[in-house]
Image 1 (cartoon, rainbow, N blue to C red):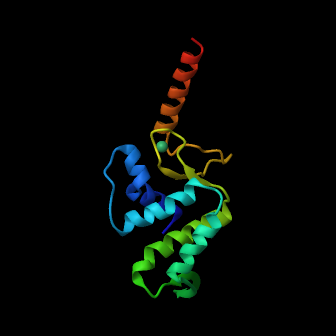
Image 2: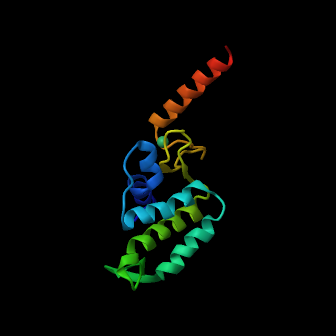
Image 3: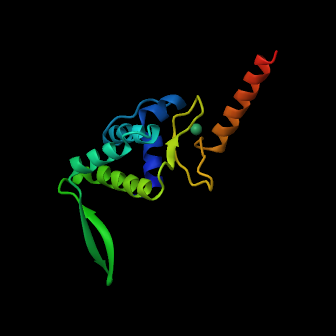
Length: 148
Ligand SMILES: [Zn+2]
């Protein structure tokens, strides 16, 4: 699972992203996981603690696998139901240790989607251009109203 897959999971199944879009709340394992992961995107503090907690709970164990003579990183969990949680936590761990701070939640009022910031400057604030444009238009209207 890549960090882009984690973003897709949270936006597709998370209660907050669905709620802001007017979609009904999803239920089940993926929804629970999405709701567990959303705060990691939303709050900078405690990211390490939250990700470490998931890694502990899944009891994921790092391994090395031989892939046609080439050694690659792999991992295993004893409880197969923890596969996706472990995979998501490992993806976030890898991403955040290589690119600190490069995740977030859309700054638009009407959206709670999460994103990975791959911009050169690392100042992304919106999940997509639609939200960025909507938010800028709203700010423009607000300034005009304030100005009379
Ligand atoms: Zn958005």
